[in-house]
Image 1 (tube, rainbow, N blue to C red):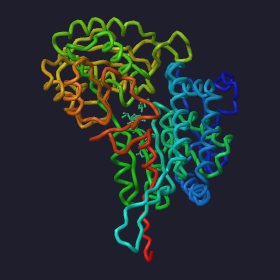
Image 2 (cartoon, rainbow, N blue to C red; image 1 turned 60 degrees about the vertical axis):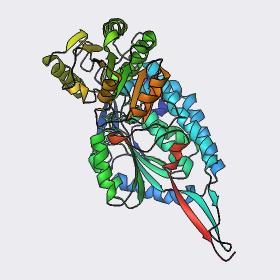
Image 3 (cartoon, rainbow, N blue to C red; image 1 turned 90 degrees about the vertical axis):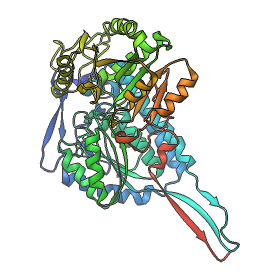
Image 4 (cartoon, helix red, strand yellow; image 1 turned 180 degrees about the vertical axis):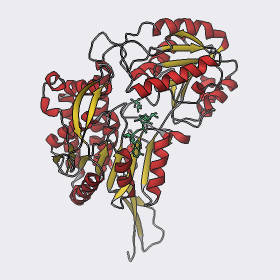
Length: 487
Ligand SMILES: NC(=O)c1ccc[n+]([C@@H]2O[C@H](COP(=O)([O-])OP(=O)(O)OC[C@H]3O[C@@H](n4cnc5c(N)ncnc54)[C@H](O)[C@@H]3O)[C@@H](O)[C@H]2O)c1
Ligand SMILES: O=C[C@H](O)CS(=O)(=O)O
């Protein structure tokens, strides 16, 4: 049982969190949460819907009137306390995450630290929300700008990073003086509810941070996007759903922040440090069993080093140990669902049917229903689905290119533009290729590019807005201009 694994079993919450209270569904409905590694039910969580979402929005509106005038330093202190409590409970939060999402425990511990870093960062940024005094337009008037919170925020988050994708939204929202209604993914509600419990213990006032858990994402999302009380929607998830939410938000002209899908290329040029390129591509591809938005979705290798790269990379991939993420011997966990395994399988089968060769792996593993073998494919062409679609699984398609121009054209031949990576020692090439790549983030001889201090986000159909860094707060603030006459 999950609670028996926890030092503090009271962190395991199975109800929604609205206006500082744990609430069950008005109709008493619940839904099951599964451990993807073993297929066991680990929790039965309240299945909230439209009525409870409206209740949460109204609570957030009432709370906003008080929260927006809490001095920045006090908001900062509350966020700092929340940060400290998250780190104090890092192990329990990591165990909860591995049980409901499947990632290996070391990665879960890492995500808790990463998620906490956003709370720490925005606790600090809360005290740096500055306005401007502008040059006068005439002798008898003065112009100035203040910044104010946008208001009630609706947030919808994915299952692949069930802690950090939440704190990356809730922390800046609260730092700016906004209140928030969060709908986490139904696959991973427990991490969100544990964060809400620790926020409550930190002293974050009732109604400021609300969590609506439920399986009817469409209904909850419709309520959040149609309400005139909700002034902003912040979403992390697939591009298809992001487009839908943007459409729904247009009717009330909401601000939107969108962190959407990716199709990250790794460009490995013949002058690259091949050891670094192999290790970088390995991390970029197989983190969270390939289920991250900035995973290496295509590995593009220059023809003269293609065989050497394939040999070294495949050797390293053969070292992964598939298994239950709670086991310290496992280095890769399951995918989130059987549907995910089927999706990855169809992408591999499509490539092989068109002539791609399997270097290692290539099919679902017999470890259990949700496992897929770490896979390397070679001899691919750009007509294959793997060249266009987000894999979201442990499959590394290695494409070949001849010239720098061909590499850039291949890399940019996608509607996505989140992250891209390149390995080269040529500094002129770094600037030429870096500026030509149509992506929001570019890793150069490095693929571990994420932190709370950088502007995370993409261009094209990978989204709009940035999360983290000094830029991440602006999405939760409105600029107000004062014109002082009769001076
Ligand atoms: N850019 C980023 O920072 C980032 C981070 C993580 C994941 N992602 C992307 O998310 C996708 C994988 O996550 P996923 O499968 O959870 O994505 P998803 O879009 O299916 O679901 C994301 C969230 O949206 C909700 N949702 C689904 N349909 C909805 C609807 N009609 N109305 C309202 N809410 C709805 C889901 O319940 C979930 O909470 C991938 O495309 C990945 O690239 C992007
Ligand atoms: O999956 C998307 C995450 O944003 C990736 S990261 O952990 O922020 O690098």
